[in-house]
Image (cartoon, rainbow, N blue to C red; front, side, top):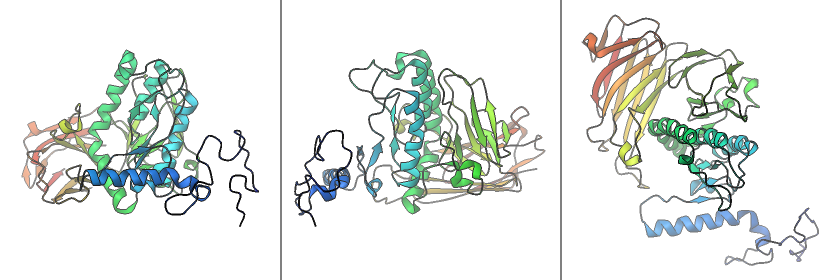
Length: 404
């Protein structure tokens, strides 16, 4: 083994001259006897682990929240990551999608995101508006910039402020769905963000797509990615999709579809068929306020008329949970079954409404736990082909909803 680690025989193409320039010297010895030359790529994660351990001692039993820039394999078990000091450019806006997919889906760092609107250089109103909507579907969502560019808080421009409101509304209503995805990632490593080929591995057309992604397993996000345009080409696999807001149906055929007239305050978001989504009935200013909002269930059947989903709730702060709440949803044959378990106190929260999408005609009869509901509790929308049923069931209850 050679001993001159300051000038090893293999010289990388380093613009700052010697290997240790502008960083820790490679001959520094760590407390455990390892030298920096052998641990340099691990150093950021070593710092993260030490910080996490210190925070855990300061707040025993409670989760830590640490965001780092330098990571190595395994860092996601202890910390989250931001993608570093990007620039306020459309190129960095686009590349942030691939960056967070790499970390969330492949490197097992689920809490990841970019500096929204860019860190260096001056952003623009349209770039910041688009990034505000895309950022709402980053696990880690932060508007952040350097001290020399122009200020870029969302409220600086009316367009950006409205874009942020619209996107944050969706993010917060989906937060329990996404929290459930994080819990699943904790259990078995299922990625909280997924490239399309994760769900459509036999569709070769999805392999190179890095401008769309799945938020959880069932929310398709397809941002506008070019400057000064209000359209985007979206790939829909051979599956059924529902617009998140209008519930309009798209029957994917494994082909690209051009979406137009996408306002700078909006972002195309679709529900993948086959899921039952637990959503809060409305957004809130804080997650504490959000926890007091009731739920609605949105049933988005696949082409066979089936759907499933789940909801996981805990106290949100403890490392080890004494009590939890879990609900499982299954839909088949025009029947929704809700099964709940767990002793976590959800207070007086309720399932207010069940919405079933893709319904081509108004139901003739709807029953809840075998009891036929009054027509006043049922609303059919012939435009969106959806039916909304007022169920008003405690979140702790198991129930069956059936329609004909």
